[in-house]
Amino acid sequence: AQSVAQPEDQVNVAEGNPLTVKCTYSVSGNPYLFWYVQYPNRGLQFLLKYITGDNLVKGSYGFEAEFNKSQTSFHLKKPSALVSDSALYFCAVRDPSGTYKYIFGTGTRLKVLA
Amino acid sequence: EAQVTQNPRYLITVTGKKLTVTCSQNMNHEYMSWYRQDPGLGLRQIYYSMNVEVTDKGDVPEGYKVSRKEKRNFPLILESPSPNQTSLYFCASSPTLRGDTYNEQFFGPGTRLTVL
Image (cartoon, rainbow over all chains, first blue to last red):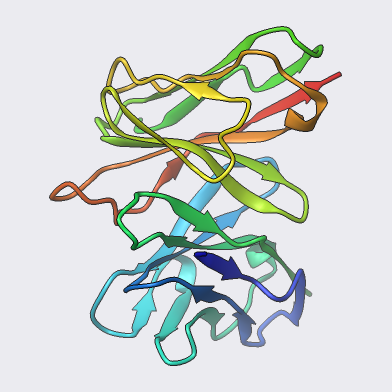
């Protein structure tokens, strides 16, 4: 079965430090991968995606992610965290098996400490 | 303004009383979808639609119905709500390209449903 795992429920990082939010996936075929962010009492907002091409993808608000096919990972990174980055982050994969389903991870709460 | 709207935003109802949550988008997107968000479970897809009159099940379709009679609207129907359908619901839409969906989804603000 297709799945997405976000192994950390919460990540704490000091402001100014680099941050990483982890995501691994299990799909058969070439995945379409996405990161979304959810601020309190808001809907989800798109950050970045990997469809094909360069493994390093740059997105909104200074975020980037690296697609690693051998490790089936798509970790979200930012070189210098801001307090305003504190939010809930979701990794998602479009099922490549011929349906048009999306599978989301359980979410990682990022807390950036001043 | 390009947006996905959902109504109502908050709803408290009782077991068995049919309800509809509306979703509308003004971006002419082909793909629309419903998700529910529950603590510890993330987002789970309920139903999706690739275009008018084309709908398909997501991972948790039981207890829900949808219809896509117009491109802009994608209502979610709970014929006989139960307490385990208490959740935060999101509608989303995205454009397709060459009949495929690898564009980002635009999400509505959410509908918080409580079934007593």
